[in-house]
Length: 454
Image 1 (cartoon, rainbow, N blue to C red):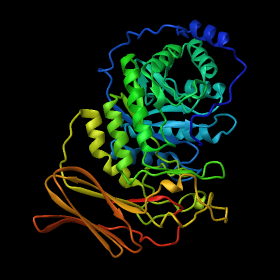
Image 2: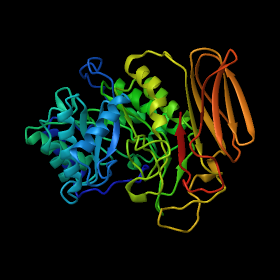
Image 3: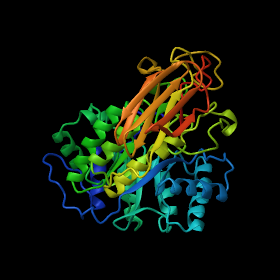
């Protein structure tokens, strides 16, 4: 995917056509004054955490079996994820999306662990109708107020009129919780005023809630927008699905860009924003977008760099992003902030930012991604401490020490080439220690990706 506030291909429907279609399904397109709707209380709905799943790209490859999908579901549930948002760029034009989805639903049913699935449509309205309709009555479909949830990556009023109207007419109404871009509003969500949000929600009153994709921006920007969006939709009595993203580095001549996240610090900031916004749901963006490096799936041991025959280059382990999220997951779901045991996580790039990379694995021309100037030549650590502890980082010939009280702490130091070592010491005793799987060298074979370890 390529993300950002850019318009999606539209249809020839006019605004009057859209209004007529939505009113026919019981929805309205307001023009003028805004009145918050008296929706059913959301407190009866459990808070859930999902992961954005790229149906095109299963961990086991294009021929992934039901058993392969079951393993991914089990891994996700072991980390506290309640379901997948199945992102499908097609349905009938590219049949692999449907084939993979069928196997995923079959795997979820066979496991019997109540793992939830819902679609994140990323194609035409007709294909969104087909995918939502085919699994409408499946027991593993996520439902909101009795209706299957349908989300999107992109779309507009015309798309919504076609999809929502057709599903309602067929006797299969959906809970529509999309992500729409804001290009026609002339500003990003983070720049919206309270009045802007009121007008936006009024003019999109056919939406049952809203998802903010988030990825493809600085963590501070995502977090600020997430809080504002979430509070606006909660005030309207509708659910909000907040984004949490570990890192972003795109590929390709038009998407070779990245955003500094300072290890886990950016992801933690987005978790805190999701909690502050009182979001109903969180969608981790993503489980398996290998090309944009936003993945959190554990595809092998920490030293594994083989995936899909190197189609996206040699990826690095990101599973520590998910492990480090456990504290925030519990906080989000239960409101409880408590550290049960000491934990230490580390995050770093494998070469200085001055070492060029490749815009795609098959492009041998050395180049730098957009946003490179924001990078820090630092190694980052996040510690969850039950009591005062000394955190040590040994990066090459450099040594750093930080004494911190009980709590969550993000620390960093300018890195040096060589091995990367980390430890926690309390009362003169080392309680945790480890070494990063890869040293930092001048060779940028990881192409500006982060390595995450624990």
